[in-house]
Length: 126
Image (cartoon, rainbow, N blue to C red):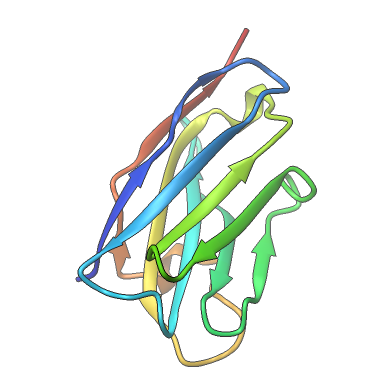
């Protein structure tokens, strides 16, 4: 399995911003897809965003479109999730995941990823 280290969660007020980082340990981002997922208490895990490191394709869930931005720094082997205009409903544990990928787009089903980082708690509350 490929190891990922997640950081950047925390407590933020509604309307605030956070940036999550997902750093690859021991491998490069070449020919990989990286997805961000979240799971709120009592809810199923949902895809938030994903990126194809080869062609730059990105996907956003409708609930975060226009507020979240996924990006990658191949030199730093890190994928970021910039989260702006945060809402209480964004509160969840956020995970990143990766999978070798030689095609286009990126999977939005968690079953498409075999390597997961540890979760980081994001709490949006006043």
